[in-house]
Image (tube, rainbow, N blue to C red; front, top):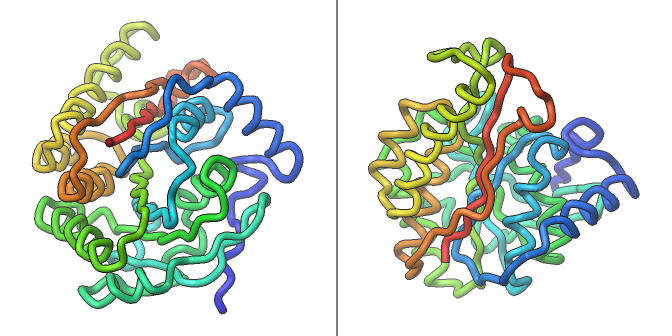
Amino acid sequence: MYIRRAAVAGSFYPLGKELERMLSDFLEKAKADEKFIAKGIVAPHAGYIFCGMTFAKVYSNLEACYDTVLILAPNHHGLNGIATCKGIWQTPLGNLKTDDEFIEIIGKPGIINDPQAHAWEHAIEVQLPWVITCLGNVKIIPITINPVLFDVKEMKELGKIIYEANEKLERRLLVIASSDFTHYGYAYGYVPFKGSASEILKKIKEIDMHLIKAIEDFAVERVIEIGSESTACGYGCIAAMIEYAKLAGAKEAKLLDYRTSFEVSKSLDAIVAYAGIVVV
């Protein structure tokens, strides 16, 4: 059986007891107002020191009631199409097994099993310590998507494939869309406006709220349209999750947290925005 070893432990997030303490501290500060049985969520995938509170806000609001968690993430390395990775996924907090029966079903329409596409990709891995801590020893379905496939037809079809597979298997399923939002600054080659820190942050938020409103409206086409003109890295993943959630009967998307890396870094050269959203 293939073992996918943690690739960014010690960089995006700490190891061992330090990781346990960090998650515990964030979750204690998050203080969930209510628990949701969500069809899907949007969660970030940056270093925990920057977006740990956004992770905590969204994960702490989930009921621990799932059999399987399917994670959609952009492939930042531009590797193969739409790819999953069967086997055991190692984390510093324990191992998670993949839901191979589910993967076999969704593989037939063209989702390939390709461990190489996942070997160094962080966007799924950083979800897993939160999954283990807040949702328990669930099975997972990791799926990376090459952003060249982020179009309406492909992402609606992916959402439908996930929905139809779950109709057959009747899993208590959560679909996670792993995405950061605006990437601003010279480090990202995106400086369409300048100004004071408050002016820049206000403009970034305006851009992101435009995309978030499309998510709240369950408007898959607008998510793709707005996302393609933005620097949000996982907008296609969000679109596919929204399509699945609509088919599964979701009625509302709730924004639980929004912030930027500037709160920690105080740097205008590299600002990344994060949103935590539940779809119920």
